[in-house]
Image (cartoon, rainbow, N blue to C red; front, side, top):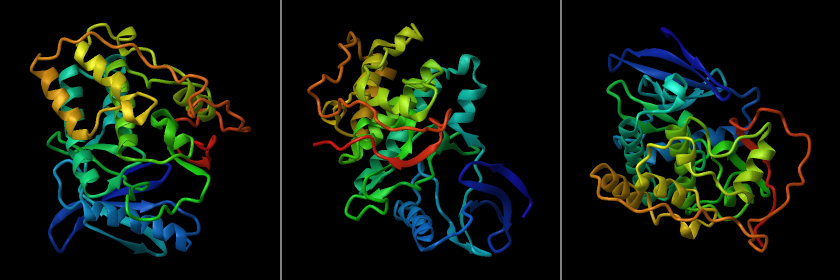
Length: 307
């Protein structure tokens, strides 16, 4: 074990040398005080989900997983950082458009592959998109990933995810499909170009409520130099109704390629507001939130059920 690479709310990551294959690897030790059977199952599921995806160029590879002195761990390649770090260091926290589109295209390729394997990420965000040493964006941290054909391990009536990037249907405890990842991708894309998530607030309840009830402000309000086609795409990804979002990550990729080529000259469409009659329109009746927790992963009672 050479050094501590970083520490977050969920795990400590160490730089370790693999003597067998003579290579440096990232050894992620999962933080859990009492790793019961359910916790171990979750860690195992993450590794299995990523292992099922194989060695895709835009998904972080899992080399191994197991227990170290009773603590679960996952072994992965060493990464140079993540998109969250890029945003934090960028002027006004806005990434250059060329870099933004390049990262988003890579994420789309990883998502399309995962979705064809029946895997939904469920917690896509800048902190879960890693950057390799050669500058390639790779999706990681499939801790909330669920195989479409398998039962959910989360307790019934609980929502999981990160408030700033959470799709309305996930917050409401409704059916989560691959289009939930597209909403999160839209929130992430919004932040990369504007320097802020689409909705902000003092606590996660406020932020999640906005995802459910409020129309998003056009990203051009914060950054006027956006190509019209990119503005349209971001707003489509952030539609409240999953059916109004792009059909697949592959379609998003094609749209990005058209924007790159300068082939899209559409005017932005009107942003849809969830009407009061919509099943996604709900008042929030949840108390005692932790302040400033809207960027942290959540596992809390959902804000309602879609009828």
